[in-house]
Image (cartoon, rainbow, N blue to C red):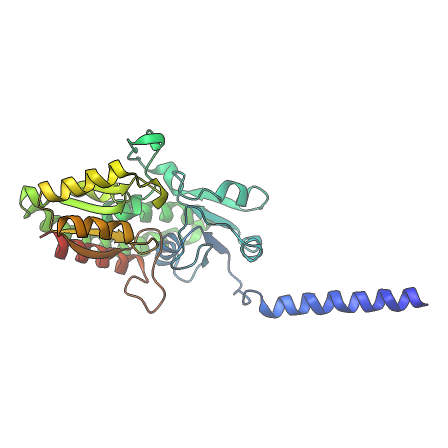
Length: 300
């Protein structure tokens, strides 16, 4: 009898715990397929194509550095409800392979259909730079890839996805044309973009700028005295008016460049993550506009 009471008591605790988990878990989703994106920028692009035909969620939340992100148990719960996982690829999400290995989801990797720009420095040499979305021109390619992917998932909605994608691309195209016109009117010596991380290779390549940075990709720990001296020398010799950093890392190292050269600090650019909802880069379009506005002010 005592064992029966103990069993009933333990069963009650388990049920109570499950009930509590349900109350604090993710809110109930509408009766639609769920697409899980690896990070906020990608989720926003997908939402603009999917509109109301899918529920779109992001694993990494606003303000999070994505490269070394460690998925949580709640992320796994979220993923278990999804039918599709869309990631960037090019080694951007170091955690993605392990994360999806035991999930029954269809996986779409954007970089499978992108031409990479390869890193040419240190142990990253020969590896693709993952940050293709930073360039509006590549962002439009992201849209096309997502349109095709969603059309395969729901063929009956293919025309709707195509129309949504075109409307969205038209908005990106306006930003692209505006920035192209700005760069084309710059003097040759002003065409340098100096940032903390080498995350702007696609932008500089697509718009005829020259790129310089304190570390190639992923970590501030990669700053060396040689890199710092090289950047300071470049900024001094070329009289580069402004330098920049990114929203998810400290600008402390870049402020050394500012101190040593007299250059202005141009501000924080958004790379791996959108801002919070009340921020000035809470959508991909706003992120592009924010970045390019700061760059225009800083280097003209």
